[in-house]
Image (cartoon, rainbow, N blue to C red; front, side):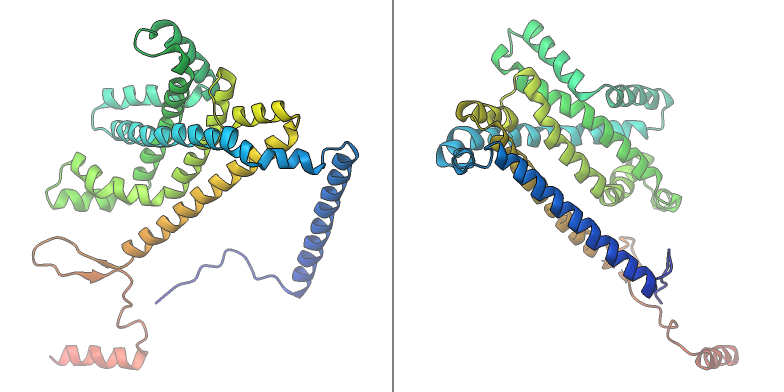
Length: 313
């Protein structure tokens, strides 16, 4: 039997009319604002076709936009992987049974969550170029500084997501794991963390989007990514506005694809976890998680008849 929980009353005819009127007014206001912006830009010559064409032609894509996209995605992809590893490691440490380990992980996580990512980039850029020049080419110090800074900051956030996700699970999950002989660490690794990862997938995707956007902060320390290449393109052709708009549209498209992929993965995971569940204990068979109770649709008379039969037996 499925229960429906209504958080608010359904709007009536009057409320629907008011909502429709407000939507129309807002749409007209946004349309008017866009028209005004277009006219203001056209009056300053910013809507000239050659300015926009120089921002999207073959030369722009070959020498500016594609290299910028490559370095942006490369740095963001590496930072996503390393931040997930960092977050899982310190998330486990935040849940460790030893207090000193939990306090150490707490200090590390809260420190890197509190420090702005731009400050980390600037510090790491200076540190790598000054003290690690024997091992890392100073020309690449900005690249490594961006990746390490994104890893530390977002890894600390993911570690806190892991901790809060595990703490939000029912206590019966760990108790059931302990009942079948698992250790607390095994319960975290096999039972609790996988469920927490599925539950916090939307938050993880939001953090991945932040990683992608924060990679643009590397422009401050000289990292050649999409924003820097877009500015070089605009400076070369005198169309800064057009080049930055194209760069912004590319960022939006990449984020949209990332969110769509995450939503698809979330739907598949939810479908898989809502199907048949194998308990994995000898002597216990597979059961369907969403199978309806056979007595849900049973009438009161039928239930009473079954009870009487049981009593006569």
